[in-house]
Image 1 (cartoon, rainbow, N blue to C red):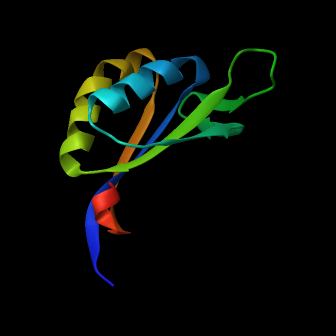
Image 2 (spheres, rainbow, N blue to C red; image 1 turned 45 degrees about the vertical axis):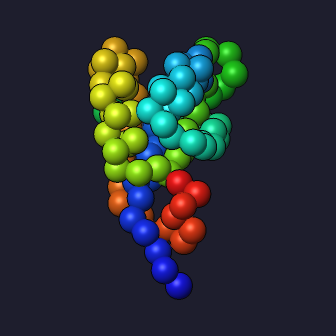
Amino acid sequence: MHTVVRKRIEILADAPLLPRLVDALDASGVTGHTVLPALSGTGSHGHWSDDGLTGTAKVLVMAITTAEHAADLVDRLAPLLDSHRLLLTLGDIDVVRGDRF
């Protein structure tokens, strides 16, 4: 079966930032995404957990797109990386039915 290379994007962010992330995805030409709740984790700033009380709820946004759209998204999100402590990852993946992405 024929596959094509696309970029997989993952963004871990505070839940209130989600509307800005979706706007950036749309503006970059990314045609679809999935949002998952992120319950807890550990990173450079220590352990975090969504206890429902302290407002630390996080989401994981995942998308698959072309390299060009991914590069545009990175440029749009660059100002938020430090100010909002986003975790943004990109990776090459092989996709079946690449015309959908």
